[in-house]
Length: 386
Image (cartoon, rainbow, N blue to C red):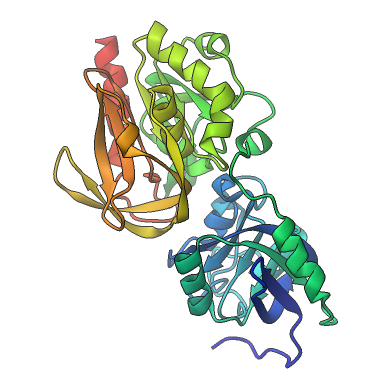
């Protein structure tokens, strides 16, 4: 059962078309403008809110039980929430989980993120699917007073994500090493003791659990900022190059990322593995184009077909842009497609250990069907060294 809510709304969501949703606010007070998306995952709300790929977006959760297991520092994908806010059907209850150290309401308030509960998230999700991801303004005011006209104007004034390079805003300020592996009972996160491969990871908004998966596959990871040059990459003497997930318009980030990737492809024989925005960066470097999707893919239950094996993987996804498969050049093969809409979800170069996928194979949150991709990357580096 959701907590009893007062009769007077304390939060308002205004869409650019003038539609209003009222409910109960929690988390921080104030106002924020963003693009609105929906996420269909049944677990992992903390990981979703701290995923840098959600920069510039407010997340509507279709699953109603959000906040029931609280939050804890181990599940953060980055230091602070990156999503601009959250919309839920039911107000969060007090957490009930042995790992919880704080309630969702208090966590959001301390991190400056606004949330809205008690709204018809099914209706909101339908609106997003039918009309595309809208620009919105979200306000939380405990006294319940709102300047509705100003909120709608703020939503209409939001510039959107097309043409915006958000990777530069969420990337690391300087390089760092990563050797922490995936969480395992009973010790939690353990350090990698015997690394086999040196990997440079370009941080376009990297999630910690992606880096942990690389470490668990035997990789000694050096993370470089999104703007790193070819010389910066090669100075690490890597055995492979990893291109991370991230937010924003890939064409905008590609202005500085693509030339570096092209030089890696032209001047070295290093294995290259990309995820999400990294997938889009690789596609651009190979000569393809990207497009803005109607409402994107956000969830932990997305079916993707692997054309090489014929298998269907249930995957975790978070992207509002996609690679246009019609623009893939000769020598670049489409390896994965979404069974929801047929959009591209993976590519590889013919005859080269270079590939990428649109989905998030680290399973945070989500199923582990695609974890083998990290092991494939490790095998490619082992084969190169043989």
